[in-house]
Structure formats: structure tokens, C-alpha cells
Length: 601
Image (cartoon, rainbow, N blue to C red; front, top):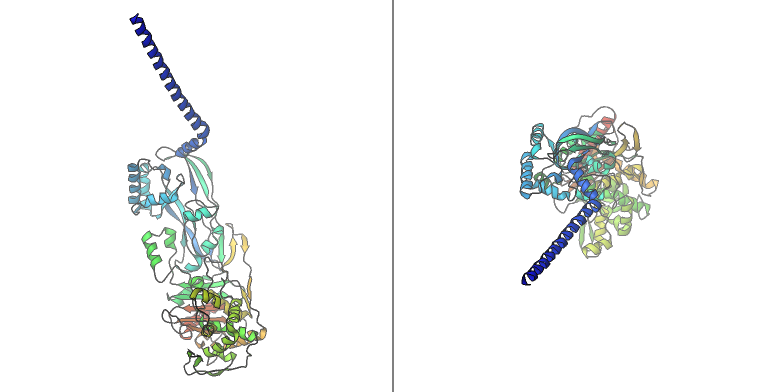
């Protein structure tokens, strides 16, 4: 009996164990089945894609960037072949030690900074299967060395691509701009771009990147576990970008830059008949080929810290007091508003008092009785103090805006700034102080809080040349397809109609002609023997150092073709420093126009 009971109990225990084992196996099988269902049905496409990516690669074939020419067909920006090294981040080992070893090898071979490869990969975020550019502009020896190490670096590729090249190096740097790899931020905001694309970062390169960039192609290849190509699965050829023909004249541009001679400042030449920019020189400048080759981080940081700001396009981003160039605005507004007439004179004794505050003329001994025409010829400050007080600040501001001050000119360059036409409300808001008559006095001669860009100042001279009409300044002349077909042409666009009457402009034009051509004129050093020039000098007070020197002109005075502005930082008197440079620029322009370069003194 006891034995039978013992056998029954053991049989029951074995049965329970078998049942438990069966349940365990059933659960395990169920989990495996669920995992298979998940992998096959829910993750099948993803896993297939990952598998394909491990053995297939889509290599972009970068489009060749469109060319940039001057108005006469001279090449300003082209392309040259260059070796670039890229890496597919997904090909790096998952093991941290092995990954670090590969990154260290890449850094050593390419002479990159410590952790630079990892930093580039981290900035790439989730696009680990797209080629990541590590370094461009490799010499042939380094390119061959990278090929030798390809078995150790399965995801590394040495690609031959076109690289931007600026034939004349620093020539027209601020107009042309420069190129660089698209940032992660811009990639998220701009459609039609891929990681690693080279895009315009400044100048017309940036403004017209949509024309220049072309369309990338691709090469679909199959690779083995070591990243070696096994075959080509497909290909699409890239489309070359469109080319730009600019209004710039390369010879005149070179002459303007030589005349500026690395002084901090600006020279601009504009065709008053249509707004075409013939020359735009901003100094100091920089070689854009440095960016195309890939500027090292240390050099970039030094460039940003440079107190001369070579990357700043002073023509559209420099803020300066217009000084006596603004007197054209003041006298035009007062005459048109009939607050003065052309014959009315004001006395200048060299100092003008408002209560207990003295406001001086540049001529300490005074000009005596001064009427409108003489006020421009000799640039009498005290005449404008009294005229400005008649106009009052609101009307003065209104006429400033009529001439284009306080508003971007709309030139086809990025990041143009607006300048400042101050108002009592602005001063109350920013200075927490009321507007005083002395502020109006200083504004009437383009000083005080009044700030403008050189391009805006040039606009007021264009208005004087054209009787109040100002065309929108532009650098683009036309766009050409890769085959040379014209696909877009820029037409002149009237930007400003100032609104003064013909008698006002006649007086201003005659006065500005005498500024340069009369014995008493402050702009005598811009005089040309064979072309009559009209112009205006300015010596703009600078609270942070020596005065700025400026001179603006148009020529020929009887039938204007061009307007010229020279603005020199901390250079002293406009008549002594800026006017002679403007004369040389006009000599160069008319010499080129007639087919012979005039010898510059």
C-alpha cells in the first residue's frame, strides 16, 4: 500500500513538472512568435531598408555650381576639381573603443582637431547613412593615403568634386560673397538642399544661390562588408547650375580697390540711369577661396575677432553719419515746402547760439550772408542750422525718408541694414530724454543721431543727378542657363520719386557743379579737365575718433551717367581726402568707357 501511494505521488509530481515545462515552452514559443510577427510585419520594411543600406549606398554626385561673370564676360567665380573626404557615420563600429580608434585614425590622416570627427557626426543628428564631408581640398598625396587606408575605414570615401574658385582672389569679395557647407540650421529651413551641399554664405553667392546651385545627381552602388564597391545599381547625372552676369566692371572694380588701397572705407560706382552697380569696393577685404577650401576653426575665430571687420560689407552694413551730404535733403525740403526761397540769406558768423549752447560752422571766421546756392558750394553749417529749425524735426525726417534714408535700398545683397532717421519719439523711447532744438540743428547737417549706409548716401546723389528719381541699385544683370540661353534679365526699377519741383533740382544741380568747378567750392580736388563733375563733400564728426571723410558726385554734370561715393573711416576732411579718390575713380571709369585707361596719379 505504501509503495503504491509513493508511486502515485511521484507520478503526480512528474505530471505537474511536465505541465509547468509545457506552459513555459508555450510561453517562450509565443514570445518568439510575437517577436517574429513584430519583425516581419511591423518592422520588416525598416529592417529591409537597414539591410539594404548596409550593402547599398546612394552616393551624391554634387552639381557643378554656376559661373559668375562681370558685365564684359570676364570670369569672376568658377570651379576647379578637388578631392574631398566623406564618411558614412553608420559604417562606424558600434563598439565605443573600436569607434574611437577609427575616429582617431581619420583625425590623424586628415590632420583634424581632437574629437572633430565625433563633433561633426553629432551635428549631423539622425542622417547617419548620408555621406558626411570631413575635409575638402585634399592634395593628391593625402588623397592617395586615404585610399590606402580604405580597408581600415569601410565608410570612408574619397570623392572628386568641383570646388569654387575665385580667379582674382580678393576682387569684389563683398559683392561676390563666398560659399561653404550648408549648416544643420539652414538645412532644416531650406527646401531642395541635402547635407553636405555647398551653398552661398554671403554676397550674390547667397542672394542667387537658387540659380547657382544646380541639382545634385546620385550613384547607387553595392558594397561589401569592408565598404568596397561591388557594382553600380543605378545613376542619375547632376544638372549644372545657372550662371550669373553681373553689372560689375572688373577693370573698374580693380581700379576702385587699388585707389582705396586697403584703407577702411567704401567706394561705390552706380549707373544713375538704371541702378546698375559698376563697382563696389569695401575695405578691408578677404580672399573667398579660403572659405571654398574649408577655413580652419582657429582662422575663423581670428577672423571674427578682427577689429577691422573684413567680413562686413561697409557699403550696406556700415552705419555712419552722412554729414554734409545730407544738406541736399535739408535744402530740397525747405525750398519745396516754401519755408525759404533761393535768394533768402542767413548770416554766418562762425557760431550760432541756441540759448546758452554754441553750434559752430566748420569755418570759424564765418561765411557772412549765405543763400541756398552758396550754402552748398561752401558747405556752410550755420545756414543749415537756421533752415533746419524752420523745417522742424518732423518735416526734416519726412524729407530724409523721401530720399531713401531710414529704409534699405533693396540692393540684391543679403543683410542690408536700414540706418536711422531719428524722431522725438525714438529719442524718448531709447534715451529717455526729450528732443531739443539742438538735435534738429545737428540733424540738419547729417550729424547727431542721424545714421546711414554708404549705399543710402549714394542714393541721395542719384536723386540729385536724376531730378528726384532713384533706381533700385542692383548687381545682377542677367541669368544664363548652362547652354548660355538668357533665362532672366533685370530691368530698371524706379525705387524713389522724391517729389521736389524742377526749379529745386535745377538749383541743386547747378550748386553741386560749382562745388567742384568754382574757386570757392569745397570739392575742387575732384575736378576733371575734360568731364564736368558735380559733387558734395562731407566731413562727418565721429565721437569715437577722428572724423570720417566723404565725397559723393555725379558725372557728366550736364547728362549724368554715373554717381560715385567715397567714404573713408577716420580719414579727416572730405574735400582733402575723399574728393581726390573720387576723381581717380571717375578717371578710371571714363578712361575705360572710351577704351583707354587714364593714368592715375
